[in-house]
Picture 1 (tube, one colour):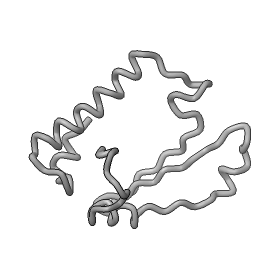
Picture 2 (cartoon, rainbow, N blue to C red):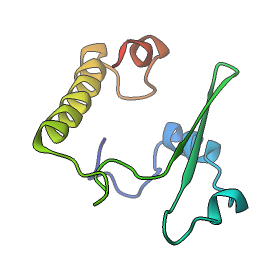
Picture 3 (cartoon, rainbow, N blue to C red):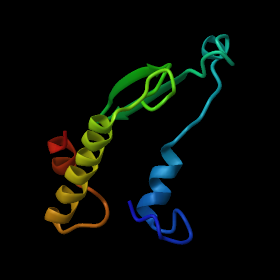
Picture 4 (cartoon, one colour):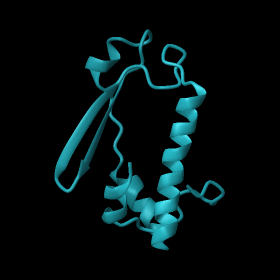
Length: 102
């Protein structure tokens, strides 16, 4: 969440994270483009994979966010930053903290 950091991916932890990210096309998802720009997000952690297909994300004109949604999202980020600050660590974030987040 350090937006002012220059250049991006300057820390070893951020470079390791960036090295784990893969972006691939999927013809099954592209069939609905341009009416809907689908995306599948897959996360693997501790050998377990979770996947979700996002068709109309929150904030899209067809799925608008209201102020209560914006405030809830801000509260989630506040919880993350508070957990990191409480741990007194910048990098990396321990699994104990990640597991405790909403």
